[in-house]
Image (cartoon, rainbow, N blue to C red; front, side, top):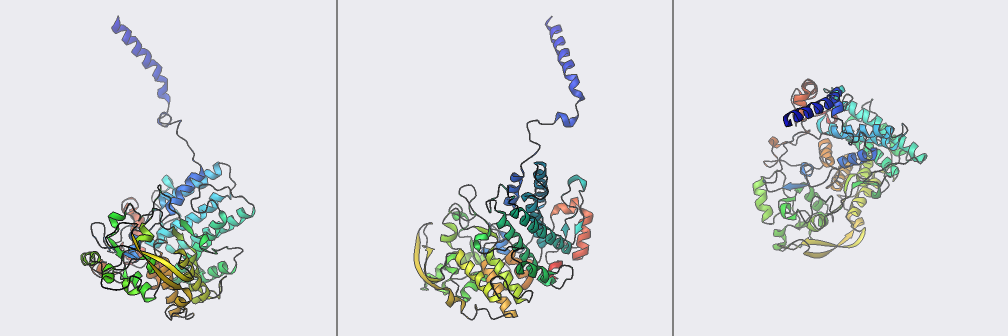
Length: 525
């Protein structure tokens, strides 16, 4: 009887399940508890985090700002691998636009306006690293798994269209007080500040295209003039309060160099002669903030607040020799008080006011425009210097306290010194005071811009050298690559296997068939 009962129950259960088999595979795997939509603000927040580029990474070494002296943790070689892949981020940008519309937003809304900026930002970021990349056919999912490459010129042209649209749409939204943005970690949902960033970024792109200023299609000079001459239509940053900058919040997102990382990398990184040497040549007080004096120099009797006490290493030096010298106190280390003493450090500027001032000064020097809102090239150049000084809380005139870690001491134990500062005296040095709209004047602008970009804005310091040769970068055994500074990053390895034909076609079109890090891309030809 028991066996018959079990058989009967089994048949009943089997009969009950049968109707369910009519459901499709997709229906059976549909999770009713999983949301099918996400708020545009959440996607927006994720994109903003992807926009961040912080300090203490490879990009700073490529810009010859600081160096690795212990090869267990890395080296100073220019062995460029693949460039950045922002395509997943761009998919989220498209999804953000879609979700805003699905939630009932009009065609022009804050998320669509920001999407135009993001597309320009991320596509040009990748192109500046690698050259031609997929754009028109990219981010289409299964509609096109093998996107063709667009030329770098086409990418820049489209970026300017997106940036123009972003500015136009933001103007309309601000005028209509249609500002329902949420999730903004940079400007607390202030579209007015985003509009300034959009236009400052456009000036950056135009400056990066300086070698193409005669291109009739791009109209580089005309675009630059249109923006700078019409601040009502194209609002620009007015001070460092408008910086697009990433602020660190303890304990959720710490500054990369902090008390917790001090024991791991504080002695294994030292400053570069390219950066520190330029500061000391100019008797620049920023060196007292960003660097510590070389211990061996101080021990030998040099005052720690003498510019002679600060020594950066040659980037081309063999890393083994650099390690010996750094650990014997012959090189300056990064300023411990300023960069390691807290978990929040300084904000990381992505697009900033000082850089914008120098870009406008360069455009005036090159004859693209006659003046900016602040005046001539000198006025913009000087404002860039002052804004950079102010970011370190260096007074225009007076004294400031500087702190250097005591030899062998732990964080928090510093020797304190007083340094007198006078910006007028600094500026009036022959090497600093602007000498006019000449090639030498341009070199002055570029050097000061390079100093202001220290620890900020990703690869912009490197891109400036690639474009202009200023300041001079050095090479040697430590930098590898046969004594050359590379000019581009390689394409991601996934392109070789997943988009082979278009990948090979792009290489033939640009670089003679080779994914060569030393080959010139269109923008710098």
